[in-house]
Length: 387
Image 1 (cartoon, rainbow, N blue to C red):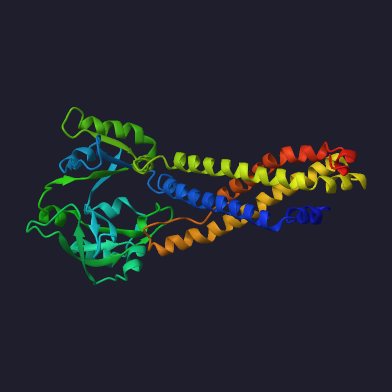
Image 2 (cartoon, one colour):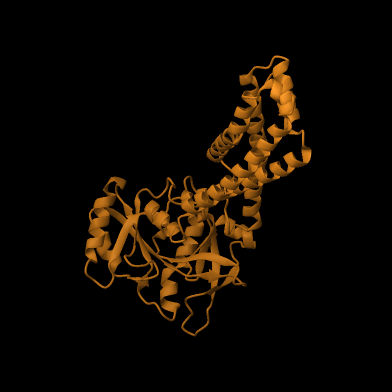
């Protein structure tokens, strides 16, 4: 810190070059912050503290392949299973194809196996008693300005009604809140009655998309999963049962290995940044050969000069990187708000900041290593003579 003013002055000796280099660093760490937020979003679904006592039973081959409703009673007889609910994908859109709604047709006891979905007793009774009733998440209600009592037309992209009309009419009877530990995305669900869906749709009858098995003890998850899958072994509807966290992780991986994609992109970005910043530092030291020789002449040690050049390199990376991550911290919530809830990017967390600052320091040390060694080994006479 004693020679910070010298390091700072050297850093901005060529203002245009330093500014352009900073723009590159800011862009790189802005990208890092946004991509890490995306990765965190996909990971959050598989790390929710809620759901540790739930298994998801779906078709062994694909989640889009339905299972017979009659399987519910057989799963319920497996020792260790406390309750069994089921759901079916509805595929709803509101007014415009871009207004996609996460809509499920759910069994009467669906809300019982998801205690983190909190609904008032009055609204729960209204849901149970209303054939066309739906309960929705708070973010979904806010997005479209829906309230209890509204009649909502929702078009299914998959299931038409028996008269061929794909637009279904629903009555909002409840808006739930979420308890602690709810998974990311649960605040924008649209839950309708499976019985209404089953009786009114043109295609599927007595079929469900997946089962949710609530366990008496999370410790029995492996044993219960094997017992459930054994029920349908060698049948035309073999099942795969897994924990809710594993199911969420598996579902996310169908879109791609997000962690690997983020790592590959950032690897390419930081490699380019390494070359760019390294070239900037090497050129800066070459231009200041005589100045560094003067520093040595007036008493600065070789190690002192080495430290100053290294500090300059690290300062350049940290200065630009902190600005980039700071912009990402502001931009991620803004993107979430602007998307109306379709994209939920969390703020850049402490883990991302720690990793980002570590990368700044590491890259700064790497790109500053060769120029600082050259400065340390500088011969005063040759440098002052311009050789």
